[in-house]
Length: 304
Image 1: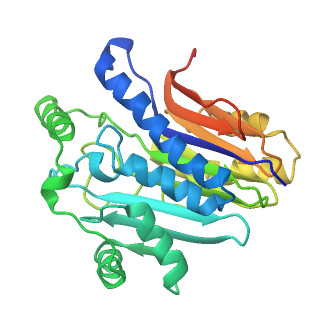
Image 2: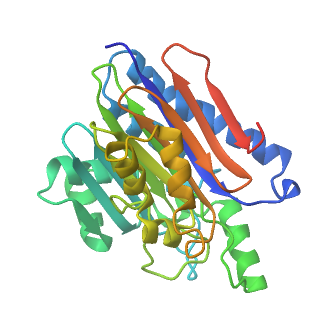
């Protein structure tokens, strides 16, 4: 099989056009292109979907213009608290971490949990101790305190917003040349979130799910809403049991219990045949994909 593809996202949100400066938009487009290329090159060489999604997400974690890794939003206390999950569609193995500090690449820690520990899910200090034990790179708190996140934190403090501003996530789904699917999702959570809050990103079936018999899905948006709807698994179930095409399954999941699950919701998905879907109910989702040797696509606003 030579059919391969990768789809990535850098967060879905409803935003007025003026809120995103041309400079920031350009940097985000560039970041998406770089992350897409990092994953695509692995697939193109015949590498695994698992390696590809990890590489793409690591690239976004390194980029301060996305809410994951270095660019993570700050909690009420002005600290970074990161979540991530990775899942191998070929065998349903998975690793997830939440409320992690100091770890340069939370997605690689999630993979280490999957491959090197007897567990699926590790939190807080326990996850950090595993990172130390496995020799994963750590960074001081100052590395994560970027000019952008500190400014946003100060603004949220001054305005005392009832609703925290930013709830972006990064993620990737891929199909490799061997026909295997994988997903990776990583986030710094919601700007101004309470200490210990966990969103949908590290929750298997909530914001992250992959199985070779149907599809791989990574979600973004209001984490509380996504996890209550188990939306990643909802897409999987609609494809597997109802036989819906991937895009229709994503659209149905977005509308699930819409009266009770109000909020920004977005998802990227890929099925076992290499079909891709990028669906969202906000006016903005940072996204990119490349199918085989086709031209790469990068988009931010809904109408492009």
